[in-house]
Amino acid sequence: MSLIWSDATAQAELVRSGQATPGELLEAAITRIEALDGGLNAVIHRRFERARVEADAVDRDAPFAGVPMVLKDLICELEDEPFHEGMAYLRDLDYRAPADQGLARRFKQAGFVVVGKSNTPELGGIPTTEPLSHGPTRNPWDRGRTPGGSSGGSAAAVATGMVAVGHANDAGGSIRNPAARCGLVGLKPSRGRISQGPLYGDVFGGVVAELAVTRTVRDTAALLDVLSAPFPGDPIVAPRQTDRYVEAMQAPTGALRIGVWHGIPGGFGELHPEAIAAVDAGAELLSGLGHAVEEAHPHILERRLAAAVLGRIVMASTVWAIRRWEKLTGVPCRPEQLEPITRSYVQRAESLSAADLLDLFEQRDVLVRALAAWFEQHDVLVLATVAEPAPELGVLQAYEDADVGRALQANLPSLNLTSWVNLVGLPAISLPLHWTADGLPMGTQLVAPYGREDRLLALAARLEQARPWAHRHPDRFGG
Image (spheres, rainbow, N blue to C red):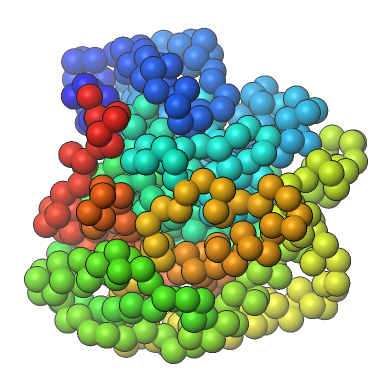
């Protein structure tokens, strides 16, 4: 069990020192998946035999030599493997990727062994992992609740010790939200930090960011080190403040100016008391570490501008994604093959023109500049990652067209805590600094200026030391 709960950095060191082999790490992960996933539905495509072959060929000197991981079944394609992006349309076609996406290659080059693909909602469109195509993933802390989304499959796999790292991507909170729901570390990098090449340039107009969910800050920092080099032709490359994020994580920060906000951007409801406790936990710890902490936030976020702009961009991008798949497969996607919420996005996007989309990007840039000005006076913003403890399965998903309005309304509070960060391209991290009385993890979110993942990781490492969490496991899956 000590092997199962070791983080990826420790597992790789065991391989390099000869205390474990990649095959042993892989078999431990396979055993764990086979024992636990029947009740969780986190790993929807298993590739155990191919993983065994790849484990035998691992470079023992690679940074993450022999460490098992899962790839989220969204954007990051793996050659000749099922790739469905949560869509019944692609599942019914038995679509298989023609080649590895660049990020998948980099995971392999870093020494990771991909043991399977993790569950995701249709096109990553909602912050819960309940696709009609593959069924819901369950939260390991309470199996009647959502693990968050859209990277909920990866988060559930990491939280239960199936793997130490789960690939994740984030278009509105899809790394941070499931990290908060499952008690993990979730960093959404700056726009342009992790390349989406060569298959994509700037997914959804720069809204999407790639990385992972992990159990420790050092794993997240080490992942940035091996994944953040740009590909030739990348449209945006984020500036670097450090050559190595693992070293930046350990560097002193000095006394920082930290703003704290107990609100929800756009005024979409109020925080649950447990979410307020998560914000307070972060603020109190940071104050105790010597930082100047005050109640402050960018007032432009009180408006609903970010929600209106991002919502329309996501709707237009959903239509683009479906059309792209139709071109690649040569098979039309019928409306009845889409989930109710996805259909509603497509319908709402019909009224958007090309000029409308350019207007949206102009409004986005107004937000970018306003937030950049605020961050000239503050180094970090602290707020909640999610607005409430994990809801029960079914609350955030719509199974009928008539239920779409209710589900979207239920999604708004938590979604708006995270999605504005995607719109403006800033880095943000969720840390599990608070648990509810009945044992559900809650996330505290830290946001930094563009390009300052180094600052977030340094703060996160000190918060991890002050209030450790890696020893906390769901009772049902901890032994």
